[in-house]
Figure 1: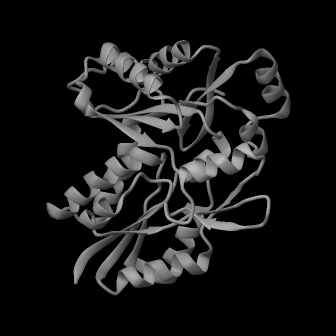
Figure 2 (figure 1 turned 120 degrees about the vertical axis):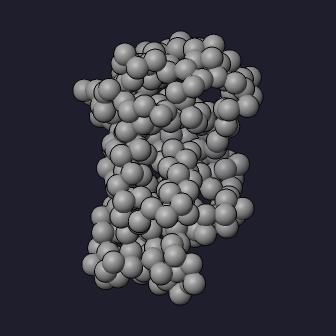
Figure 3 (figure 1 turned 180 degrees about the horizontal axis):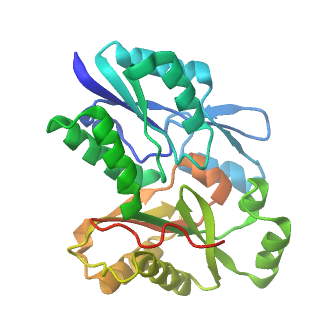
Amino acid sequence: MNKVGILIDSCCEFDEKWLKKINGDLVPLVFSDGNGKTYNDDKIEITRDILFDKQSHGLIFKSASTPLGILMDKITDLLKTNHHVVYFPVSSGLSTQFSNGKLMEEEFGDKLVVVKTASAVAVNKWIIDDFVKNINSGVEILEAKEIAEEEYKNTATLFSLDKVEGLARSGRGTKLIIDAMKVLKLKPIIELYTKIHFGGIGKKFENIIDRMIKKIKKIWGNAKLNSDSITNVAILDGGIEKSKLQIIKNKLISAFGIKSEKIENVYFPLIVLIHTLKGAYGIQIKSNMKREILKWED
């Protein structure tokens, strides 16, 4: 029997090979379309291209947390081959996934440990990789959990989107602000750190990327981000052109002196794209230094 099984939800970047490597399993978030059909966000029931096609034909999707019964079954299954399960849900400030996980802690006792996360996508994957390394090197589970939770203070996630309508439907922005952005053809710059925070606006794509990079530098304050202090970088792709992905990569290389091969291209999870719609893009960074600004005022 293994010491620890890792449970993630579908807001984390994953593939089957990686899940096997970390001794992990997926508990999918769920979403439904305007016709009442429900989908598991598991990269099987519906693909990104199918989602974009349905959205282009006017279907509006809504997201939901994993039903408690399914979450309980996943934990039970993992405990059949592991002494403990450690659950990394989507950011604790975004969804009831975290609070549902805490309810399961009451059910499973010390067999289940729920990590209070502050991000999603590639950041969660990077921190899980570090957590697994710590466990394999002999660090106790609760200590490794505390290290993981602190490690979110070494990360930043910023993104923008081409269409703002999804923000209004998801309650992430007021109708007045959304309508003003649509009229003025402005795009929001958003940071995910525990919760969603508005970090500014821009109009042209390259200007928005420049502003994101400026925000990232501001987050770390006097600590200089460079190729030595940046441990991981990802470009978040929500269906933008390859030429735009290359522009983001070039700007990251120029701003921080990092090597091209250090930069990952990562797709936004479907559960995110139902709100951002096609055309979202962003940057995730992890450093070996803590942020000086944990959040800015919205």
